[in-house]
Image 1 (cartoon, rainbow, N blue to C red):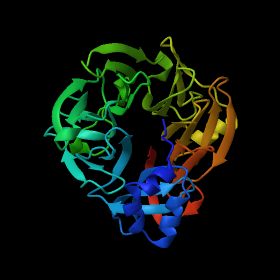
Image 2 (cartoon, rainbow, N blue to C red):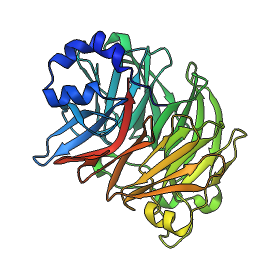
Image 3 (cartoon, helix red, strand yellow):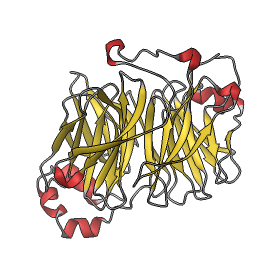
Length: 358
């Protein structure tokens, strides 16, 4: 869930030093921000990096990265954000948005690569990262010690193939993992190696022990649905975005809902919403009050916002090559691979996810 940015505390504390190093335009964008977000980009020279923007998309700060990043996670307790390489990358970078701590670059061990997502423990002491044991073709959650320069100290099984996003549930202990079900190997780039027998699942793990708490299977007619991204809503449900690898003429929805009783169902889509998503959800978000869920699609070129209680679409927005989506104090902020983020356009290509920092 997004964290409200207290600009008064920021400007009178450590943020004052950060503010003094900004241009007048960027300092003004920071001073007027309700929220701050981090997202990855590529520029026209194919240089990769990440940017910090406000709730309107105004650029506050940018840094280069050694390669293309995918998702970010933030810990208030640790005061750090981490950006993960896009699959099949092996690097991640931890950084303090205020610049008070030196960035830490760390990597997966041999035989593993990141899937672009991870999450901190509730106390900010551990980082859990979705990884691929690519020779065995099974998913792992790498465990990293935040206080020891992100040294890898262990791993859990994901009890599936191709884990993508891993999130910490509202209880502060349970990890939810979307096993996308698709086997890949770095020798074959991003090729999908097992579509005929792929099996996507949602798995719940105990973050302290790695014990399997539950496995949620998809209905048989969803065998080609690869579950990727998740967000918890106010009613205790989990909203999930999938990417369908089957018949493009099917009417299977790429938006799924897992209720508190463990039952997973498709969220029905009217024709306009179905066209806007095009069987492919790239990112998900939930409003600050948890009452609305947003899903974006680069393939369909837009995003749809649903009422969590009724599962009805309440807003549809066209944005060609939509990338990330995140909640703001007043609604949603979205980005595009063509350069728009929020209300602002840049000569940058924004990557798939936007994460709130505070």
